[in-house]
Structure formats: C-alpha cells, structure tokens
Image (cartoon, rainbow, N blue to C red):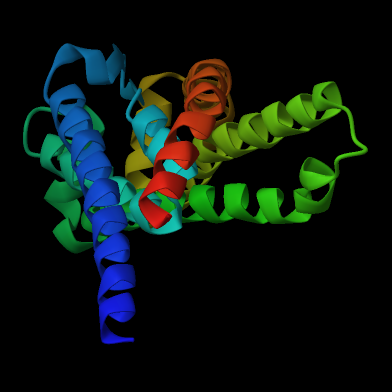
Length: 230
C-alpha cells in the first residue's frame, strides 16, 4: 500500500509540476507584455490593456487558482506602471498608494479567479450534455465554443467592471478631473471613453483571440493532464 500511495503521490507531484511550469510560462508572458509596447494600447488619458488575454487563457486552461495567480501578476505589473509614467496611475498613487494598489492589484486578482470559476461552473453545468453519447459532436462543439466565449467575454467584462467601479469609488475627484479635461461629465467619460472604447477593444480581443486559443488548446492540455494522472 505504501508503494501504491507513493505512486499516486508521484503522479500528483508530476501533475503539479506541469501546472506550475505552465503557470510560470504565462507569468513570464504577462511580465514581458506589461513592460513592452505589446501589452498596452496607449490612448489619451487611458490605456487599453491586452494583458487580460493571457490571464483568461491561463484561468480557463489551468483553473481558478492559476487564474488568480496570473491576475495577481497582471495587477502587480499594472501597479508598477503607476510609477513608470502611466498618466492615470500616476494620479491615483499620488493621492493614495494603498487604494491605488487595491484598484490595480485586487481587482485583477479577482478577475482571474472569477474567470476560472465561471469556466469551471459552465463546464459543470453542461457536463451531462457534453458527455452524453446521444448528443451529436457538432452540438457538443458548439456548446464548448459557447462556454469558452462566455468565459473570455467575462474576463474583459470583469476587468473593466472591477477596475472602473473601484476607480470611481476611491478616486472620484480624479475621474472628474479627467472628464473635465475631455470636456465631458463623469458619466459620459466612463460610458464613452472607458467603456465605449476601452472595454469594447478589450472584449473583442478576448472574445475572438481567447476563444480560439482556449478551445484549440483545451483538449491538448487535458490529454496531457490525463496522461500524468494514469
């Protein structure tokens, strides 16, 4: 029994090492993207981030815990940008460093965790259909793509919702200042500039690129996990 127990412990350890290696790859990718021009699309008074994509992909392929770790990495790089010339980031850290950390780090960590939980929940909800031999492969494929699309959409939605809600909550005066600079009200600034432009771009990138990447790699990753479990 000890030998069998040791055998199973070895399998679990190998699976853990594989997941950690995969997570480390995504962490490195996020860091590279964050500190090079490919990570952000710079707009006047606002930056559209592309870092939601690797967080969403990791959360979907590796689970909520990985999503949380990747979201934390994204948040830490975002917070670092506040000290490296980011316009909005510089304004909020100059007013309150702790609340700026909450806006940048906590929101992105939650986004990664919740994205993984949403994907996991949808997979569980459709499990019977996806494993039913009487259901056609075409329908299963459509449902699977739907699950991936909703999860990727959720990542962009949660990132914007959590970030903007905490930004307005903690730094309303700065948002008001940004709005007045653009000649608009706070509501119009948030709806048009932050949501109408920022969120739409992030959503389109995540919805299409994220869905293609995760739905294409899911079976490959799962097969590797299953081999390590055997």
